[in-house]
Each structure stands twice: as structure tokens, then as C-alpha cells.
Image (tube, rainbow, N blue to C red; front, side, top):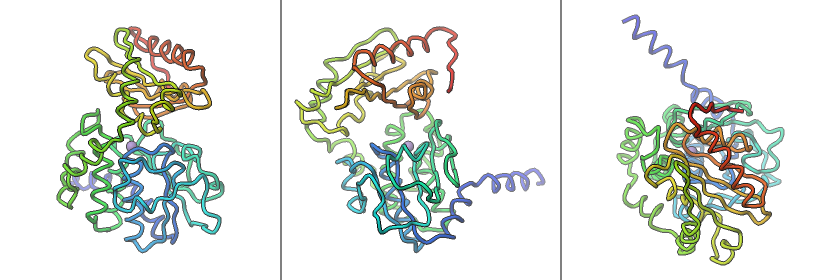
Length: 338
Ligand SMILES: [Mn+2]
């Protein structure tokens, strides 16, 4: 009995969402944002957090550096997300909430200096850069943390919130495939479905609503597929992007075709940027810690999924990342985390 009571006390002390909730209760107006090049978790969690703030009677605005990817534009309230490089001049929020950012710079937004910052993140590369920080690397998506915040604040999860949170959870767990997907992930999915989220409809919007340019770009990338033992890589040049009329978001998920090869444990997708730098997405399905690899080049992410940007030209960036991955795959290699 004593043991159970102390465990409960410990659990209560372990609720960092309460600190965030109280900081929200104490304030009136919020700007909510997420990282540049937003993915499904960033968009779905941003939308649901905005709805939660509204349900708490707060004034809130959503701002992203980039536009919302096409496949997420059918989400409830997606048209309310403003895309711009800076806060509107007439809006002075009491706090800025950043989702999945390891720094202010990750949002790419200007005008956040001097603001009261709240950081909610689940990446292993998460950093305590804000005034209040809640980093839970055990959360399978930041959507899980937003859900916990809503529960903590006593907000009833609406159908719209559930739809956004389910979309975020589905995409960030790789359709419940990635490492870290556990009974809590499915329990959350179950709750969201009970609240009205429609799995087949959402899967259709996320996976079966691609523009044709994405498939053509995938074809170009697969033409460049290379493999060396446990490493596979593929790339597209900037001229491929132009020739195929592809958008940045069309690159999403291409790396999964390389990591999908039997016997391949680490994969890289490289994209040449207009300024000749090279954007990389890394995936692993073994003990290779690709966030640690990405961090060495100024990027970040999760153990099995990460990203970074290197200086070009394309083939020298490719050599540098491949050399590092070969080093990591050597027997007894020690992964150094910068
Ligand atoms: Mn995420």
C-alpha cells in the first residue's frame, strides 16, 4: 500500500505537462509553431494544440515558415495556418509554443527573440532552449504529448482534434511500424478512433492522395539507387526537381524505399538544393544511431530517423555521409554524440 502511494506521488511529480498547462492557464494569447519543412506530426499536433488553446478560451494563432504540404491541407483548420517568415507586426503573444524544435532557429521564424518560449519535443536531439521545456523522447509522436496536455487541462477532445492527432500519430510512427511503437501508441490510437477519428479515411488522405510529381520524382530517385552491404542510398538533383515539376514535400518518404531492402540497415536519401547544399534524410533499422550521425553535421532527429544539410557539391556530400556511415558500421564502432 505504501509502495503504491509513493508510486502515485512519483507519477504526479513526473507530470511535466502540468507545468505547461499552468503556464497556459496564466496567459491569454499564444503563437504556436513547429519546425520548418513540417511533417504530419508537426502539422497535426500544431492544429490540435491550436484547437485545445481555443477550447481553453485563449487567443491563438498558428504560424509556420513553410506552407502546409498538400496531403495535410484537408485537415480541419489547416487553412488557418499562416505561412510566413515572421510574426505579424500587430500580434504580441504572451507566449510562443514551439513543437518539435531543438532551437528557435529550427522554426526558421524571425521575431521570436525576447518572447516567452514553451518547448514541446520528443526528439532525442531535443534541447532545453526555452523558458519552459517538456522533452519526452519516449513519446512516439509529439501528438501524444499534445493529447496528454489536453487531458491535463480538462479539455474534451473533439472529432477535429482527434482527426489531427491520429494523422500525426499515424505518420510519425510510420503507420505504426517504427521502433518505439508500443501498447501506449495503440492505446492512444484506440482513444482517438473512439473519439471519431476515421483510420481508413485518414490513411487515404495521407498515403493515397499524392500528386503525380511525387511518383515521377520517386522514379528518378530509384534510378539512382545504390547499395554497398548494409548501406543503401539514392538521390535527386536540383535539375531532376525542376524537370519533374516536383515540390520539396514530394521528397517525403523516398528514403523508405532504400531502407526497405533486405539486409540494408541504414539508408540515406540526398536532395540537391537550389543553392547546391545537400539535404539528407537518414533511416536505420538496426543499432545505428542516425540522429547521432546527423548531429555531427548540424542536424538531428531520432535514433532510427534523422536529417541534416551538408555543403555541396552533391557527390562530395555523398562521400562524406557514406564515409561516416561506413565508420559507424565497423564492428565495435563507438557512436559519439556531439
Ligand atoms: Mn514527431
